[in-house]
Image (cartoon, helix red, strand yellow):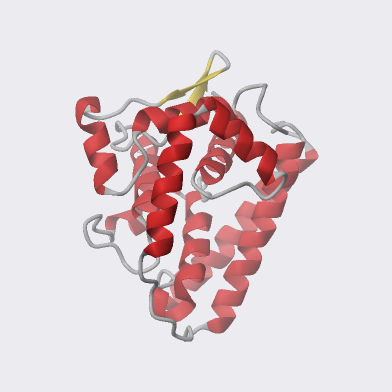
Length: 240
């Protein structure tokens, strides 16, 4: 697989995962959600139950971030990359087109800014940028496929049993698997897929019999339901 093609696959997968792990997509949410409920009803029920649990749980205490200028910039970078990815989705996820090139350009610009933040202050923390800022920074790291060393360095500083405020088990699993694939190892959580003969299949998974137990420890949807979602979103029948 060529570098450009692999980059496109990674970007598409990141977009699909974001769509599968947030409530609804930015465009035509009713249509997309209805489609997902029809094709993957068990996954929809699981998401409903766990979304309700999250909404009922106590939120983090509100506190003004100490680096509001970093928060503002992180949110602007997040919005720019999401708008670019939405345009790419509408184009049909074409690799090499104007929309694809724009996503790649924005990712590289965001990476340079994020690296400057890290050099100055370390990885954006809850105290400095709040939960929304940490979430935005983490999204940028997930999309930093041109900087695998940075991804690995950030991952190595985390303990999945005691994650810093603002970083979820889902986010840890996504980065853990991404780093494993880049290092030629089997993934632990089954989050990473790639195209083989036009079909999206999972990269090799470590100890697949224990997969759902590991996913459950991080609060992830059971693998079979996640796999259903990937298949549904990559189907020609998926809403555009």
